[in-house]
Length: 225
Image (tube, rainbow, N blue to C red; front, side, top):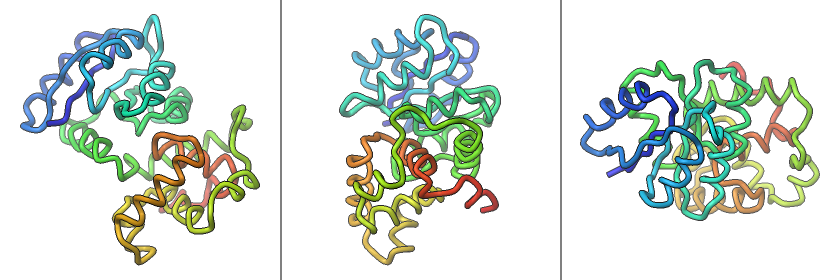
């Protein structure tokens, strides 16, 4: 059973999502939060697997709440909710550790599939849309403070780990990476774990951002795939 926490300051939105999710046999909503601070507090007591997180909320916004949740060992996966897909705040939430984002008018089946995907943790949610968002915003804004440079990335990662990171940035799942490199799934999982640890990230989206910001992957490189 996948345990879900809903964080949105609009009760109607939370109610709609709850009705959709609780109609699925493998999903259950364990808590609802009206702001980011409440989401963090409820996550400590209810231990959800996935949090649906609105970006703009009172008291503590979704970006800060995402960072607070994903930075903890064994923390939940976070799916960010937004009203338009080029929202710069979504990029900041992905950089903070969100596993992906959804538009608030998402279809019911897409919502359910997204939750199952991020819960599995071995694929980038909506890879084409996510990497286009990341690529465009990386190209349009100065590097974030503390961003990994190309030389730093090369010093931290082996050649094989850099190859794996490029494939992650292309949106490939672990199984697809295993087929591309002709190695086992367990080997890929180990490489991905090493990449995350060496880059100090907790989610695939953060690894993709590091790949773009360092210059290992160019913003337009996969824009047509």
